[in-house]
Image (cartoon, rainbow, N blue to C red; front, top):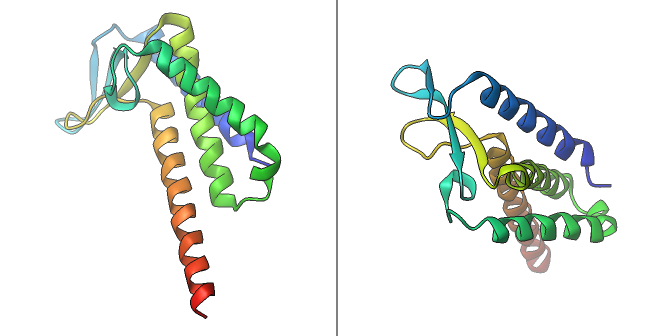
Length: 152
């Protein structure tokens, strides 16, 4: 079974932190954590992870819903996949639902991690990127295993 709990944990932590940021910070406020390197900055993002594809709300909603529907539809096949694939899919789904929730509420995503050399992002964005990386790694590792089996 796909580790649904991991996706749920990502969603809950993402929403709790976003709720805290919106409750205790002013929009645009920036709090230094490590001066000149890392800040908590409250911004509203009309785009995807790291601000890409701004103002494409409907597209992001459709993509997130399709991703969640695909995870549900392929859940039996995913149950037979490696743990790396399962965790990758779960992280991506949890992150997608976290940002989807924001978009459905206000049309914008709450972002707050600010390293000043990269667009501001959130926990859901991290989960989506780590999940995608795990999926890609799993695909390449499996491909290398299959190539080795064919040669040996």
